[in-house]
Image (cartoon, rainbow over all chains, first blue to last red; front, side, top):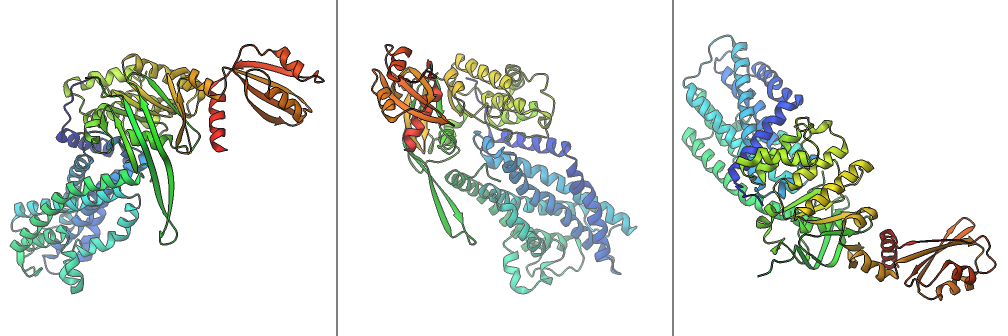
Amino acid sequence: MATRSSSRGRGLMASLRLAVLQFLADPQWLVPSLIAPVIFGLVSFEIFRGADPVFVLYAIIGGAMMSMWGQTLYGSGWATGQDRELGTLEPTLTAPTPYLYVVLGRVIWNTVSGLIGGAIVFVVVTVSYGRPVPLDNPISFVLLLVLVIVSLAAVGIVFSAAYVYTRYAGFIQNIGEFAFYVGTGCMFPIVLLPFWSNPVSLLFPPTWALDALRYAAIPGYGGLSWGFWGDLAGTLGLTGAYLAIAGTVFVRVERHVLEIGDLSDY
Amino acid sequence: MTDPPAIHAEGVRRVFEARKGFLFNEVVRTEALKGVDLDVDRGEIFGLLGPNGAGKTTLTKILSTLLLPTAGRAEVLGLDVATQAHQLRPRIGLVLGGERGLYNRVTARENLRYFADLYGVPIETRAKRIAEVLDWVGLTEAADRRVEEFSRGMKQKLHLARGILHEPEILFLDEPTIGLDPKSARETRKLVRGLVARGVTIFLTTHYMFEAEELCQRIAVLSKGRIVARDTIGGLRRLVGGDRTIEVEGYGFEDIEAERLRHLPGVSRIMAEEFGPRLRYTLRVRTAELTADDLQNALPGHPELTVRERVTALEDIYLDLVEEEAH
């Protein structure tokens, strides 16, 4: 018998590598990852076009979110749904590497491809604007954009657990897609939404991260009352909490599906 | 200290619940396994036979840690499948039949590399091990082709390669030759025999009697969630009433003639089947003394009588056991 050097990090890297290979091998990914961000950038630019020069920042953030949220959040859950469809969920779960690390590898790739989409939106909107984007601090903007996408990834991991839990996760995710998109402030700030919806929005880390991003990028932005630092603390706290509970959720979900026995159903 | 058996199961039950109705408020329970007891020795090929829905795949999944038993206890290599799955998984392999279970858009080699990493095959020997198993299943030339281009037989071989990649001590094969052409099926059986020669224990479920007969040292027959028999093929022949099977075919038999056949020396069981106007009696016979002449003498007035004799096949045994359970 071979000596085994099973490690979680190795499983994570294998999953990341496979995600990249599958991305490169499948032309269908060109649409959401390269073509859609161009369209999102153009649409967002037209939606927010106005006299105030800061509109371009709203357009960049709105368009980037349109692109990133699908790639990162939706993609992370969908990959597990694909495992069900291909029948690879069973052999993957019988492997010694915990499935959470397989998911994490995919989420890292989805995060990177989401950031590429965000960058494409930035370029498209900037070119459409035809002038320099009025960004006071580009470094903090990029760092906050990364934080936004990490917060999306944290939610994506929990969505992924739902795909392991039930074959109906895609159905549930599709129903909640638009509500989540609007409710977390991806397109426009949540302060524009009815007040009663705000407490629900605040349960999701991207809500806080996006508000922090707008505070940092848009001069005179009036978002959630606790301001930039409160948003930042909320983002870090909630993202950490999501990542921390993901491990427990996966252990419980795995136990549950072994009790139910529907891993090969899709 | 002696090694624990490869598999030990005691009273394994499994109940599936399905929710139905508009609001999913109706719960339908199906008892797939009704208390299975089983022991498999190390280094043997153990066959599990049974009709569709008998519970074969359910038992395989429980033993390979993909499903939890509702009740009872199962140990593989001395480890509890429910509570010690993480220790057990690196030591077992699972090959499920069919075309699913592979990443179709990437190559065979990449599929194996991915699972080699998940199973912790040492990095320094990974490439060599992948090349070895590809060679062993005869896929070396196709190693860098996408799996979506593979035939069903090639996919099945790749499943097998993945199952043994991490050198498991026990391999669960769930209908590994289902849907394969005869040549591919024969090659797969040859590979399975090769594994046993390397000391791997095989737990095989199959629908194909000749496959079980060719490969397995011991066989269990599962019917309606219960093991109805478990022995060597010779033992099973004795259980169903003899090594010899004699078929008597003719027209217009009277009931009394069937009774006469039943009471011939050595006849342990008699079954009747109609083929249009013809009737066939199949007799299981324990002794060597009964001859074709004895049968002709027992059925005078039937010059058209056809008598055929053969060794009782596993298929005969299987059908006897499953039909007995059905009644």
